[in-house]
Length: 103
Image (cartoon, rainbow, N blue to C red; front, side, top):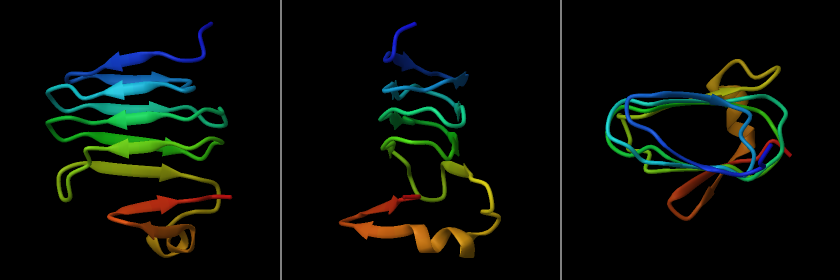
């Protein structure tokens, strides 16, 4: 099994054990689901359309680009994290970006 790959999406759902993968923009409304607990540094670029990224807490550094305000959605799944208020302590600003670090 390869540890890295590039996928292009267009109105698709991708459910995968993501490890050092690059997900490139496509046209349409995409849903990206990453499995829990896998290491790797991933890049997700949503492209046009209303995209949903469902992120499960795991190891590695993951970057989501092309994420317009009030268009795309991110859902973060982490044990004992049930509200925006509980997520805030993990967040910090880095230029125009938000960094979420679970340690």
